[in-house]
Image (cartoon, rainbow, N blue to C red; front, side, top):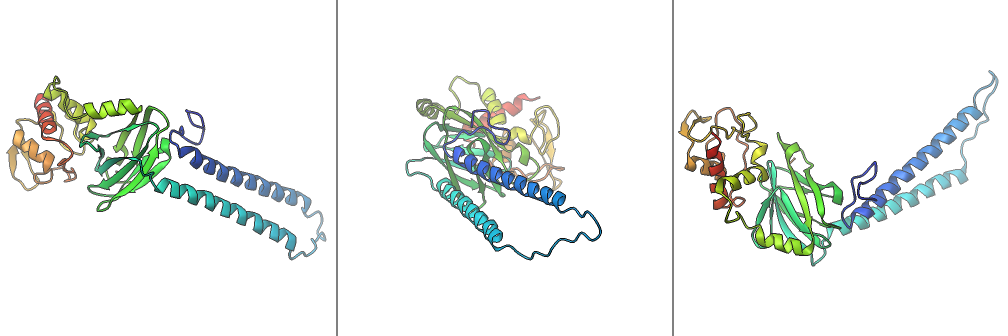
Length: 313
Ligand code: CUA
């Protein structure tokens, strides 16, 4: 498979992808061959045995043992072969090598968060080293999601209340896309993340530098980055458009009325509480669907997002 992929498949960018594609192509190719062969025989027989006159009756022929053995034995071998290949690949995909680099994955409506061994998190961006097996330990905060990287040919459900895992080894530096492939609500189709594959050294460097806000970056600017990286933009617009949640534009200092009839002025405390405990006060007219960002955004991150919201007059 070349880098652009074929007409059927996206580019194959992991160590396992070649084997998965080979099996896929084998099944597709064999099915096509059998289809063509059967159709050819059917057409041949239609023409050969077309009734030519009223008393043209075909002789009775109730079976042919040799033919029946052939058309039973060949498919049995094909099915056993496909099962064998599928099963060995399935076992390989299911068992991560012992030296795999482990990354925690949290899925929630509607974003992915990745947590690394040193405690750093990166929302909606999965950073991995090339040429090294990576194991993802995944969990869901709310409903069933499914983690899918087409370029790597790996997919696994992410289930509330239990861990699931998958592993892959990216072949070379580059980018790929993660999709959620289990319908999980309004913004399911926006639940995407990017895989960024670094060289080994670049990855170590990234891990060191990725811890939060660069010291020379203003809070509001960092907040703007977090707004698009952490999945806020899926539900909250910054231009007044009504999405799944209230727009950030002009929110600060305004009064929000809640589903239970009470109201409050939007200030720092209200915003912080809405990020950590979103369903305590749900603005009237909106569904209580926001997940908590407890454990995903640090205090500094939350301060930055609040600063960003303040600037959206
Ligand atoms: Cu998460 Cu669909």
